[in-house]
Length: 233
Image (cartoon, rainbow, N blue to C red):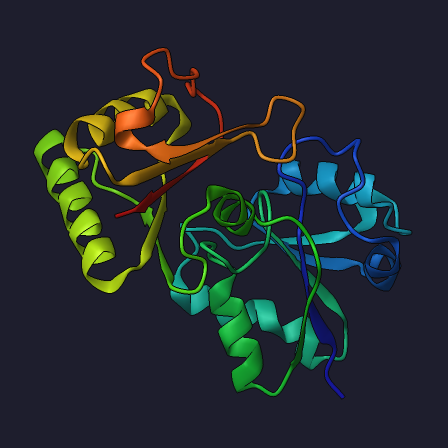
């Protein structure tokens, strides 16, 4: 009998604030083997979660964007041996805009039970708070960094949103947030809704969602703050 792969959300910022419902937390504190994006962050999250095994005795296997595809299958072996395994992301829900999706796909292929758990997702929280179409939306990850390529990507997203009535969701490296915001305000049509949701679930949470023409000139400073960008034409 195989083990169960638990998809364990992690906090979007402060581990001192409970982020899992108690009944969900109790389902996974027995686990001793985890697949993680970064060991240092994972240890901090798991300590706050209250796992019953001492942190130094846990088995933490790394799965990130640098993991060769050929190595992912080996991470499934503890599950095939009957152990429960927890999949943990750096922040938020694992396997959503996250390399853990590879492991989940393999688990299904091998008949391993997969258990998604309730927890914070910055993508869904931002979409909920944006006022944009939540029935038809697409997440694009990062847009191009180069100025002209980025402008063309923004124009393409706006055209797609207008044509399909589809909300467009993406992220940016936090230190480039203000540059991205300036480019969006310059490129998008005045009537297009632009939402920026930063520091979600944290004390400094900031959400601005307005047509481009109505955005304040003295917009909040989003520099180095984890943020979600949403466009709806």
